[in-house]
Image 1 (cartoon, helix red, strand yellow):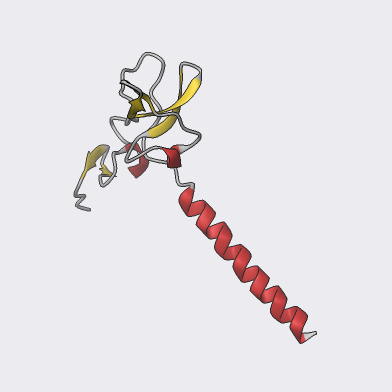
Image 2 (tube, rainbow, N blue to C red):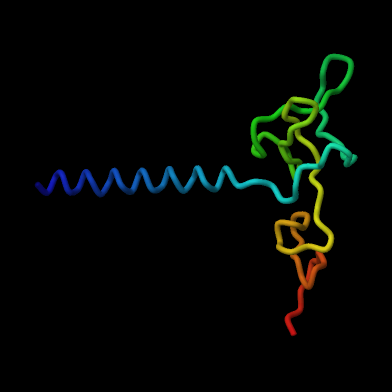
Length: 110
């Protein structure tokens, strides 16, 4: 009985650890994907003598602040669009916070 209890506890710890790792890796990048009429740039990768937009399945496939967005029928790594005025920190570029509707590096609470 003690063996079963010990194995159950160990299995629970392993499953909890793997679930936690999966959520931290799947954290989406900040900002929103650009709309059809919004101009942005894509993350470029070499393609023979030229360059092309990097394909992706999710934000983890994109470097830096690029987001995985649908573009011309395919998912590509694009620079995100940020809301102005902001409503929450996710509306601002990395390292900035939303303070009174403005993305800023410092936020003084009054």
